[in-house]
Structures are given as C-alpha cells and as structure tokens.
Image 1 (cartoon, rainbow, N blue to C red):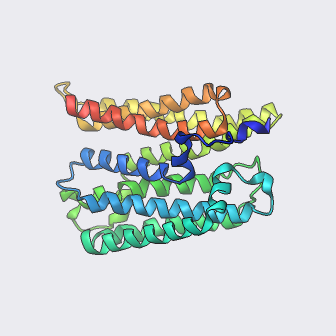
Image 2 (image 1 turned 45 degrees about the vertical axis):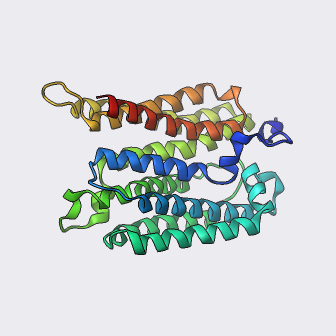
Length: 301
C-alpha cells in the first residue's frame, strides 16, 4: 500500500514544481491577476506579482523545512517533499531568505505604503499557522483541520491583498484589512483554498486507513464545503448578471470558482486511480484551470 506514496527512482518533471514549492506561488500569482481584473484595479505593477510570488515561496519553503524537522524523528511520516527539502536544506534556506528579502525590498520600494496596513493582518495569520504547526500532533492519519483553515484563509487573503490596495474605491478611510478579509470574493476563494489543502489530507488518509466509517466522515469534510461552495457560486453568478441579461466580470469569477469546485469533486471520486503525489499536483491543476476559464470568458465577452 505504501508504495503509492513513493515516487519512481527517476523523479518525473511534472513533480518538480511541487518538490521545489513553486506550485503555490504560481497559483497565487494567477489568482492575483483574477482579483485585479474582477475588482478593476487601474494598474497593478509587476513588482506586486513578484513580491507575492516571493512571499508565498518563502512561507512554503520555511513551512516544509520546519515540518520536515519536526517529522525527522519518525521517517515514516516524511513525505517526498519533506525528504527533498531536507536533502537540499541549505539551498532551500538560502532561497527562502532571498525570497523573503526580495519581497520586503520590492514592497518598500515599489508598492504603496498603504499595503502595510493590510500586511499586518496577513502576518498574524501566517504566525498563527506556524504556531498551530508547533503544537499539532504530527501523527500520520490525523487531519489538522484548524491548521488547514488558517492556511487557506491566509493564502486567499495574501493573494488578493495587492489587488485590493490598487482599487481606487478602496482609498476611503476605514479598517482596510477587514474590508479585504470580509470581501465576499475572498471568503469564497478562501473556502476553495481550504478544500484544496484538506482534500490532500483526506485522500491520503483514505488510501491507508482500513476504517470505512472514519474515511466517510473525513470525506464529508470535503463534499459538504464543495456543495456549499458550488451553491454559493451559482447564486452569486446569477446575482451578478445585469438586469438586461448581459454578462459581468463578477459572474465570470464565480463560474471559475464553480469550475474549480466541480474539478475537486471529480478528482475526489476518481482518486483511487492516482497516487498521492499525482493527487497533490492535480489538486493544484484544479486551481489553475479555472483561471483559464475566467480569462477566456473575460476576453471573449
């Protein structure tokens, strides 16, 4: 059974983005573009995309190094990405520090100072995530729902942050980070990110646990949010239509969310056909394809 968790001796090229922690930055940058288009940001400079990519990459590198160090005493708990980061620990440490430094310098030099009023809340979410990592049980088969929820919300908030800063309507006084955190689009995307993170844990657990009832309960933690997300997407997409029946960009956004929800559902139903490594990559693909759907609808409308 456990051979399904191990890659081939020759690591396939499609797995390297995951091993190098580059998959999350790619997803973040693509969805930042979606938020910028949807909120009609007048101008979103290239440094905003680069700073986001570097920030996400740094967080993922340090998280995997930290997670790997906690699991190093139990080799059976180490997954391929953890072993890869431990094997190249020094190189990843350098890359993580450089990425974090680059993100900070770009933010200081090329982005509006208002961004720091948002970033503080994002930093709190990241610190909360690492705090939960420290106190988590680190037992194979136990799904850390609280950690996944914080991670998903932090990813969604951080991804949309720069776009929100550059929207002219957001220049009014107020608690900026709450305006962003409570935005309907961010909440919906946050739920999608939570599903993405939790689904991998649930699918991995279902491949190794003999307890059918336990697996069914864990599966419900995926199917229920997906059902709610799909229903909300349909409702908001319909609500976003203009009175004359023409399409709006908000409608395209919720169609993209609905597409991703459907992909996760199909992937969950077909998960027995894939290894966990393949499922990890496909879970990211389920977040990338909807961006293409959004782009096609946006530019052909």
